[in-house]
Amino acid sequence: MIDYGKRAARVVFGLFLFSLGSYLNIRANIGLGAWESLSMGLSYLTGARYGVMSVATSVVILGVDLLLRERIGLGTILDAALVGTFVDLLSALDLVPMMTGFWAGLGVLLFGQVLMCVGSYFYMGAALGCGPRDSLMVALARRLPRVPIGLVRGTIEFTALAVGWLLAAKVGVGTVISFFGIGVILQITFRL
Image (tube, rainbow, N blue to C red; front, side, top):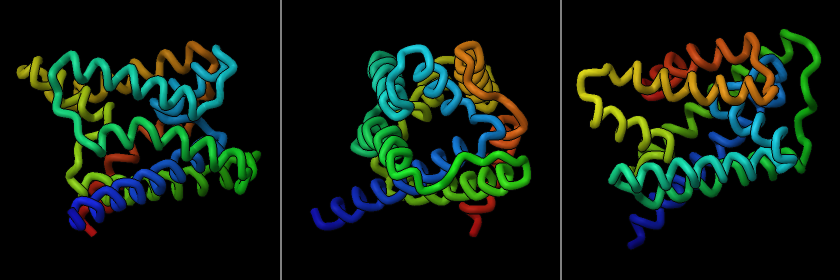
């Protein structure tokens, strides 16, 4: 039981770091990642806070995961509940101003990407379940065995990004960096 508690604490710590990275990506103000774009667009549409829409999106995806009979763990539920909540908390504290210049925004974005990857390392390493979005990717990949998993992931993320963009979320250079850079940074982080 003590080991399980340590693993749960590791998940929460990882999700906090991931959320801090997501918050910094928003504050970078040079373009949002796919899921940030979707939650921000829904926030604009509904008037709800970003984090509330992030949690709502996660709950909907979690429902789809369950319908697809994907395994759900404590980490899956904590991811759905905490990432958006932590981002809203950080936004309320207003610790980092919205960047107005490209180079400052780029630095904040890259630091945010690194934090998201380190957070993912802690979160995934606890082995208490995938996040709702990753579970969706796994579920779809199992049902589409002839489609490369990268294409499945890319299609899901592109769809989230397109909906966010249609709802007026900011898409820009940061979006491209997030889309292509996160994999490289994640690989380096896990290797280290």
